[in-house]
Image 1 (cartoon, rainbow, N blue to C red):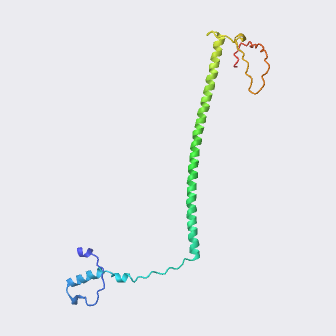
Image 2 (cartoon, rainbow, N blue to C red):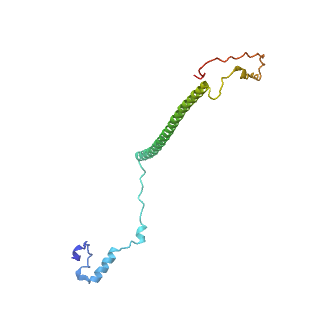
Image 3 (tube, helix red, strand yellow):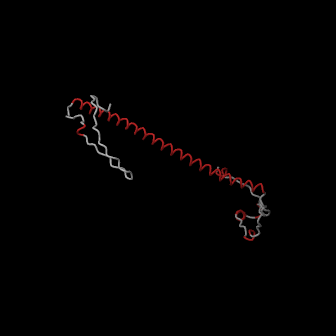
Length: 174
């Protein structure tokens, strides 16, 4: 059965090496010599180069077009990547700025509400007279004269008229 699995490739036998020309040992030796032939160096020195034909103008033009199109394709791909990265960066910055703006608007609304609540609370305390707060009187107000501007002649001093505070029951902030 082992002989049936081996493949056999027949080789042409040179004349004089048939079954009648010697024993099996010589045939195997001659077969080994034929399969491992060495090419002498003298045969390799006779190799002549193939003459090259100059390329035609069409081939030159097509190769130049290929180089230019490859460079342009690379430039376009690079430009597309840069523009995509820029758009992503700008979008991210815009999102962050929008979030920050909304946060600041909420804080501003909260501060305005807190300020109005404090004003209302103070007005209620003043009206109730619980803390001993008093309405301002013009007698306790200090009036200062503005200093003259540099480079301008001083204005004549005028006597300030007495300021009269309006008598209102409600706070002035409303």
